[in-house]
Image 1 (cartoon, helix red, strand yellow):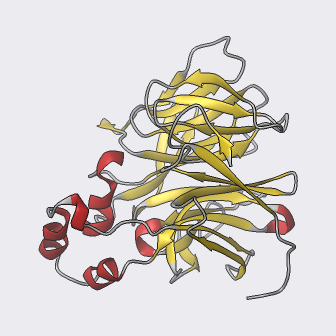
Image 2 (cartoon, helix red, strand yellow):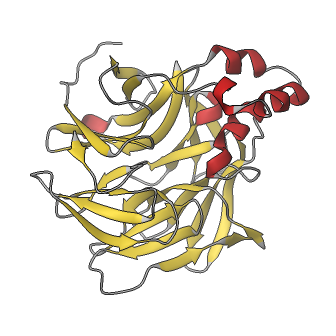
Length: 305
């Protein structure tokens, strides 16, 4: 475990100098060195979720409270708000970004009905108001809409497709960004055994998925039921609502969506893994419900399914 100076590292990434970066619940962005030493490099003034290197000296950050941000790594400039409204509507629950080679930013919004503090409401009601948008300079357009809790996003190396985790649908969805099928979606990996969260690129072309929790029997029961019944469950006391299980979990899939690695650890002192990142032969795991990053050995790639 790598202890952090705060709580709630929801995402984890690596900058161009090989430092691990994560964001905390109080708004701070933290750099983690090779020996586990930490340094606060910025404060978004909100709640950072997904983050991605943006050139050599900045991050682009999805902040659940402030929208899409540019955060300098040097500390010599202020945090810049790139987008906090879309078509006049305040951007709530901005979730995860992906940066294209030309600087275009794709980013997800998990829900238009619920904020981060009430995320369970969206999973229970299946509002399908998640979406993926594209920011280019001063313009924002919607790439895909009607998604079930849009979460982590990952661009193909050639920029032709973008994968998004639909947490509420237990699947990874692929969005075409070019060609005759631009804007169309298809299921890359469906009927996953748990809730997929953030996506990161790993070696050998694999996509690593932070798995927040196994599927919940109550949620599976409610999925095809009437909306009023799902809303009624959201209204019951928190102690009676579905909760993440005590498991640390990461999946890796290949370009066809087939599972290559399925790593699970019950009762290991870490749970609700929201992101996993490969760096220097290790897996760095983040959790929105922890004060540490967890580190594990990177398994060898095999053909196991």
